Image (cartoon, rainbow, N blue to C red; front, side):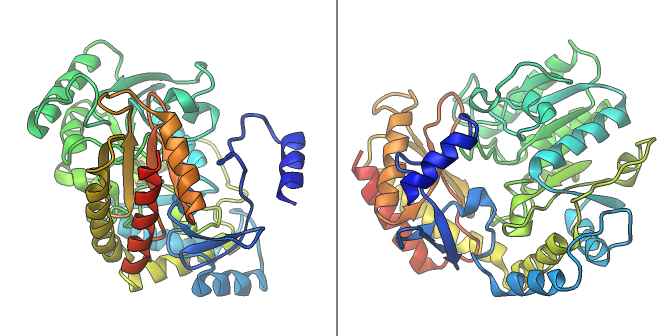
Amino acid sequence: MTKDLLGRHRAVMPDWLALYYEDPLEITHGEGRHVWDAQGNRYLDFFGGILTTMTAHALPEVTKAVSEQAGRIIHSSTLYLNRPMVELAERIAQLSGIPDARVFFTTSGTEANDTALLLATAYRQSNTILAMRNSYHGRSFSAVGITGNRGWSPTSLSPLQTLYVHGGVRTRGPYAELGDEDFIAACVEDLRDLLGHTRAPAALIAEPIQGVGGFTSGPDGLYAAFREVLAERGILWIADEVQTGWGRTGDHFWGWQAHGQSGPPDMLTFAKGIGNGSSIGGVVARADIMNCLDSNSISTFGGTQVTMAAGLANLSYLLEHDLQGNARRVGGLLLERLRAVAAHVPHVREVRGRGLMLGIELTKPGTDDADPVAASAVLEAAREGGLLIGKGGGHNTSSLRIAPPLSLTVAEAEEGAAILENALRSI
C-alpha cells in the first residue's frame, strides 16, 4: 500500500518536494510522543512534524477545542470580529516582551516572515535586508531571497537586496577559534564595516538558533551587541522565532531572550509549535511598525476560528504544565546523555543546542568535512530502531536535528538516546 501511495505521490507532486527515507513513511496517527505508520509500526517521535507538534500528538485539550469550535463556525475571515483571534492575540502580545505590541496572524512561518519583511521595508523605506549566513526563513519568493543556506535557496532572484552577516555558527567560519567575547566583538566589527559600505538597511532578521541550518547559534548576547549597532542607525531587529519560540529552548520562552540585554526585538515572527499541527503563524511588532502600511489588507485564513481555538488550548496547556521547565530539565539530561554517547563515535564533531532543540553534527572522522551520507545512514538506522529524527546543516546536510514534543518524559528521553546510540555506532 505504501509503495502504491509513493507512486501516486511521484505522479502528482513536484520532484523537489523532499521525502525522508529510502522507503518513505506514511504516518497514520499519533498519541503523546509516539506515532504509527501504515504498517502498524510504532515510533518515538523526536522531530514532531518539523518542530510543530509542540505539546503532544492528539492532545485531548486541543482536539476538544477544535471539535467544539468546528461545531459552531470554522471560518469567517478577518473582515469580521473574531473572539478567539483577539483572545490569542492578547495573550501573545503580553508574552512577547515587545511594548505596545500588535499581532497579525498568518497561516505559516514563511508567510509570517514575508509579512515582517513587508513591514520592515515599508517602515524604513529600504529594500536592503541583513540576514545571517546559514539561515533559513521560509519558502516564499522573498523568504528564499534572504535564506543563507544554499540547499534551501533555489533562486538568486529576489525583490530584496540581502547582505549576510557573520555569527550564526559558533564553531565554523573565520572567527571560530576565538573565545565567546572576542567572537562577538569580531562579528560586531564585521557588521559595522558592512554597514559602512551600503545604504541603510531596513532590518536584520535572525533565528536565535538556526533551525534548518542544523541547530547552530552564536554565543548568548550576540544579537544584543548587534542591536546596539542597529539602533544607532534606526535599523530594525526581527527575531525569527518560528522554531525557537514557546519555551522550546528551556532557558527562555523566546530565543531572543538569550540576547535581551539591549531590549526586545522590534518584531518577532512565530508559527509551528503554537498550533500543535494547526496552521498558525504570525508577526508581533510595535504598534508604529505594524500600523505603518498605508493601504488595506486582510488575512483570509490567518486567524480563522478553528486554528485560534487550537492555539489557545495549546498555549494554555503549555503554560499550565510548565513545558518550558520540562524542556529545560529533560533536554538537559538528553544533551548530557548524547554527549556521552558522542565521545565514543568518531563521526560526531559536535553535540549542541539547548532545551529540546538539540543537534548532532557528523563529519568524516578526523576532519571538519561534512558527511551527509553518514547523516542519512543514522536517520535510517534510527527509524529501524523505532525513532524519528530530522536532519539539516549548512554547507552540506550532515547534522541530525532532535526536537521532540515538550512533554517528553525522562524515560522517553533515555529510550530515544539509546536508539540514537545504536544508530550512531552503526555508521
